[in-house]
Image (tube, rainbow, N blue to C red; front, top):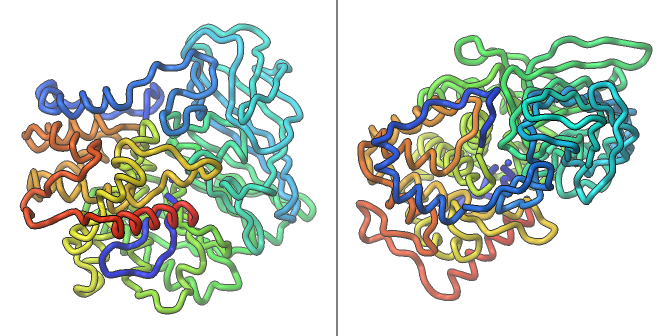
Length: 528
């Protein structure tokens, strides 16, 4: 998720960062009937607080309470094949062709795509030209022939992809090219898509650029082809991916290959001019991967690496298999090595929590950020030699939690984004405020059960989507305790519940602390 860069406080560390009924994607095992009964109270809270009538097929939006017009009903995308032609100027539109393979889930005579990224030249459906129109940030396609439920469609959109004026996400301009930052809902500023994390798909990228530049994208390389002064690079993902996690880097880059645990192929991407400075930081990723695998199990994807960009974004981002970092994280004087590495681990953790297991709705994003913050904090505790103890950080978060809830809503019921600032949903309550929920759960069910839950969560829902209700049900089943009501209070309460095992922990009161918490929320929104 967007993670504003701050100096460490040896307590609360800055927020760091970006569902589903997908028949083509493995769903994961269903909790037992006993586990579902044990979670009944918490699940009832989920249903009551998040219920909304699903929009009609073909309408704008899938009914996400945080982003009501995001995504589209009536179909699921199975794959994207995206061709981009980069001129060498990062302020000029890229010529693009987006090919989408989708299957209808309802009878349709039109199909809506999220798209706000540039001029559309033409649309075809199954090889036949199709009429289209623009409606807000949607591309409305009139199907040449009505489609019955269950039909496969192949949509081809020829368009421009414009990197200019994308301060709210999408393309980001680096000193030598481009990269992507599509969280929370900005992939449709780059290419037409069903831009909601509940509709994961496989991706193929074909990117043509001047031969002097290097292109890297999600997944693994399938080859490159030269023609005159230009080169086309092709990459493909081996696992389904949410649109918000797409990444394409174009620039004067050095690609640093290495091997990770179990021979995992890795590649880190850094500006060629900064290779000597940044290579030692990138070289830390194999050990960080091994550390995470000891916590939650095998890395879920085909490759991993860090993309260090010379750009001012204000955040880091967990783009799938290639996490995005600002160069200044590694070059800012005074940041302890353990702190920088803990930020790297935050984005690495997202590969399990948020990328492999994606949120069903944006209200479930606490599951992403709680876990990434949790492992960031554990790593910092281990590597800081006593300077960043987890318990002190959680106690401090407990003191501020009521103020965060007042500013941003409870962890699983976040307030909508501020007008014109879609990434402002990433407030402090989503980071340390949500990690605090995991701490409370660990205190409630014990370390051993908590560790089993963490591994079971990423194993059961690998390559799929899951939500708050799924987590409550699995926690009840794994622990053998009725934690539905307990988690319901922690996730949806306006006030922070008592912390198990710590009756002396108190939430700070008074206008001064509340104002400070609100200030942090505003800072996080601005930085993101």
